[in-house]
Image (cartoon, chains in turn cyan, purple):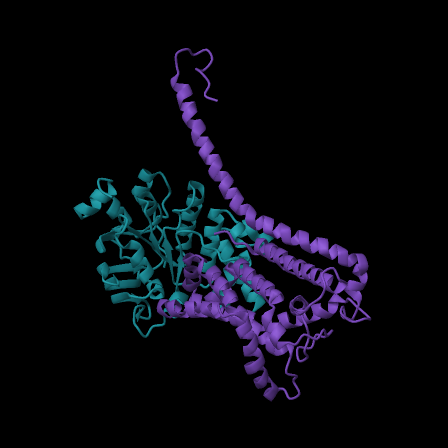
Length: 282
Length: 314
């Protein structure tokens, strides 16, 4: 499935090896993992999203960018129905998850089922007041897994997946909040990975971190793409350019432009996108 | 204070003027500081005064009764000719009634707190919480007669042979009295847990109950422990309910089905009677009071330790 290709041009300009791998221009895009169709969202009377239709490609990183208040986080949080936690919120339209064509927003679909398939990493690291081990095992415990061997294996695999294993393997039973900010965020990523989600949502995962921790999280995101489909909200356009294969530019609750990241950054079709990308706006 | 110019820099009187203003400002600041300090001292001095009186009067008592027999004697008959001063007798009543109260208050209070903090809609919380707090405003003498005249007869139907005065009834009602305290402080502690932590749990596919029990409760544990400790202190120090409903017979027992006097009930009993000042019977009040104070102090220290031990930094 993975047709890895040479880094495209934006890589050189941004001075980093990109995760690369959007299919070269002309070839068929990768299959869809999910698709938002005519999605509108209301916080009470306020309409935060206006009829958004956007594909999410499987095993690719899709970045959502745009100025503050454009609805990118709101959009992201529709994918795991986080808005259901607060009263007065309303969805319209649908988010279809492939291959089974489930509409995540359907009233008959249990939001807990949705969150079992779509996991999330938050802006500020939020490890639970538990040991490192129990933090990672949390999602499995919630699902009723009690088999010690299975838990051990999953915890190790997830911590390795989040590039944290070597740093914490000797102290799995210490409290997770004792770790540094970057480690805590990787712990949260491990926690999200432990349940083998199909989609992983990142809500500005590095905005609370220093540049070194940010770099390690970005590398991790590029790496994780092999096993999971990723949606990431970021304030940082360089970050979007570095980690993503596809980019969506949003403004005032509307999807202005969606395309491959290099297209968005080098040949945007819309004037608004170009203004934002080049820093003339936002 | 307002010195002249800076040495070696002639002709700059401005500096001294500024200093003068600063001096008056400092004086005002200091006066306010002193006032605030005085206010804070009142409570500290009161505590110190209580400790001083208790220790001083207890010293007189322990001049006549050895601390060893105070702690180990199995009889408490200070007013009899054959006087015995075994505080353990009263302590057993205090411990038993408090244990019953906590067995009621902690599970019930915690459950209410979890409900109010994690499940109740804002509307029902706004209605339920003031009503709950009203419960803690009921005078304890009312609770005492509630225990004696309402709860005890019910218990007597369930447990044949239960005496009219018993620790069980008093303890249960005392527990009900403490529920609002435990629930209210625990709820505050749980509500202070940041939403980000709950969202993290929900995002993992946890239910509300799983989130409440596995994430919010442990995160709020230091505050909840403080609530429990306050509840214990309240139970240990409670007087009227026990004086009314548990009887005033000193009785070395850990059986809640029996009547027994607690330390507080004894103090009331003796303080109401006409004992001459300076008699040994009168001095026992202070020894009993000191015991109570030390007991409460111990619990507060445990509470402090628990709070440190389980403190979560967000």
